[in-house]
Length: 486
Image (tube, rainbow, N blue to C red):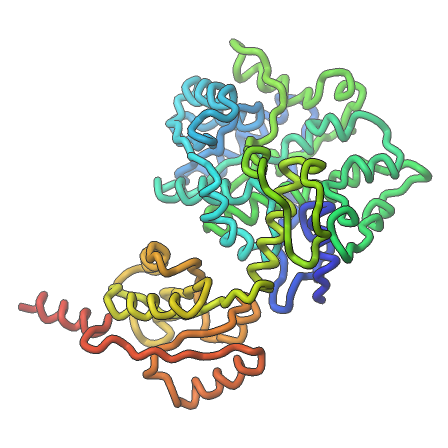
């Protein structure tokens, strides 16, 4: 079911689309992380139990080339202790001038256990380069960490890493959300504290999100522990699930497979011992240093959006006082607007789409892309997978991932996507282009007459371009065969 107003309100309030089966647009199904199977969970009583359970997870991963997303916090530092000789990837923002103490601690952890440390340099260019990719993967606007997670994944993948290790779930499972655990909340106070951005403050047609809190009502109080287990866990973990999935990078969070055998000791959490079991294990792993305080994954959103004037689309209230919003709230407004622009251009922007194999890239490919870009504002190019090429009884010389990188490097191309089938109407439902560009050798064929009619019904124009004479991937390949034969 499609309900844009609901999805906008849910994203602003909870940072994800809470209701399965409710989506922004036809053909877009949002993706949240599935819950781990109950038979995969290990219940722990002590820090020693956690240590043994994590070691068991790493024992099951032998044979893989592991990397770790290593921050300056406890959770990834503990995981690094099981990974001697592996590679570590640490986010470095704004040339290393942002949160220097985080970098110093990560360097210490890597040196302590003999990990090879790689920096993942992050800036605004990371957002502009990868935001569309991770939004396409989720079919929804995303968390501000997702573009940087995607960059870390592709950097690790280029280094030959087959699986990344993260420590994302520890805060929720072991009492790290100390501010949310700081009191026994009334429902009204918890709703005000937890809601990331009240949709009624920024949207012209907001939908009421209070129903989700009502599910956990207990008199005038709220069962905030179960709320966090059910709601926050999805919001947080789905960011890793989506970003790494978009990069086709397998990952494991050993903490996600653990549960506390006894109820969380809220007294200890509320009196300075948040994550008391994890703190104990951290001290065992690094006895020479003080246990660090919990620090969220760094992201300089306050700097990114310092001078941003706010959204301008009709869905948003106009002339918003942006000084009332935090950097993370500004991110949500920005990201939501970018997502809407991607699927529903409002300013007369022309979205173009074309597809191909792009094997043995040559001047004919370049000419078509140049002409296509000249007739649209934003050009999306679908590159056929190796499987699709084989289905056509051909075989690409250049592997799919390399062909995709080559096309993405062309300056006329704004976005590269994967073409897994030949269904152009399905592609329109996903990318919402206004015009499609095709080689003129297809013009007038029964197949393309049918496609033209289908696309015309949704307002899409098909433009045919003449192929560059004298060259083609097939001709180049045949020439290479002859030269090799000689």
